[in-house]
Amino acid sequence: MTVILAGIATFVAAIIQRITGLGFVLVLVGPIVLLYGPVEGVTLAVLLALVASLVAIPMVWRHIDWKRSWWLIWPGLIAAPFGALLVRLLPDAALLLVIAAMAYVALLAGHLPTVSASLTGRRGAIASGAAAGFMNVASGLGGPPLAAYAVGDRWGQRSFAASAQLIFIAFDIVTVALRGIPVTPIEDVGTLVVATIAGIAIGTVLSRNVAPRIARAAMLVIAWAGATVVLVRGILALFM
Image (cartoon, rainbow, N blue to C red):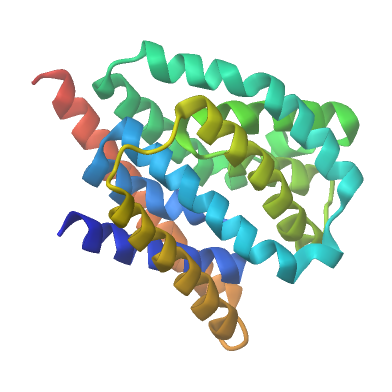
């Protein structure tokens, strides 16, 4: 039953990722952390996000901004080990609260224009890239700092969404290397990988007829619900 529920969540997350260009882990992190725990759940989510980006990148290759991507990637790679250290130091209950907090930051980032306005040029890229690399390893949620930078630096949506796949590939590979391979049975991981690929394929078809704003609205509803449930579970875990 666990893998079926996780597969449904993964499939939906992959569809939204393909239509909007972002949001895979944001949609998936709530359900998968509840099903597999804060350590294994995030590790699985990042591995599946890597699969999603690898499948999507051939479709967006020509729109990648390589120079901007590089200035976001290298600071993130430097900051990534500190995210792994945080995961090792904190108990599960605290990790649940950290993941919930980062999810809320992700959801509120778009409503903080003053933050985005300060993230411009190479300095903004370095700050955003470092934050994204750290958050990606700690919670799988590396997208918000990148999105904030894209807004502040007036990065076109198509180029940003394409470049984000390249950046996520770099961050996700490092995250898997630092966190380790999931301990979930290989057949279950395989099922979730298939669900990811199927979601990307269906999302490609739906992207021709479904407006990104509709997919974005669905992403926000699922993400808010997931973050809230993770927060409640973290609070309850503190007293257990």
